[in-house]
Length: 153
Image (tube, rainbow, N blue to C red):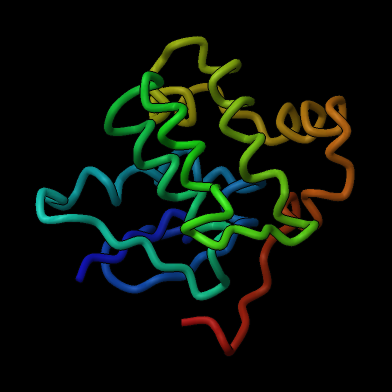
């Protein structure tokens, strides 16, 4: 079983520490997020597991597809957020995850997503983009440093 964590400051291929805050507000995302996808041969499949639920799992799967197949896989990536069969019912503070794909596509302007996040991703730009499109309140806490929980592993 392979588990890739995108949301840890130290991404790893086994284990999971899915903290959305590390992605959205932390510089660690742009430097490290896609390294988990580079380090392992996923030819026998990929399991992405988040202790917090399906929202970040759908997000990680969407990013993986765009990373591996390019922006041509955008529709396939967005399908990861489908209510069925994935039972994706995002909480209010996680409704920024799916619109992020549109933000990334527009900002990357055709560049590979890993290159864009490494060279150009700006959390402040994401925040204003979300607010401009009426997504107020959908990103509660993502621009704050996360606090570890004894219940996360």
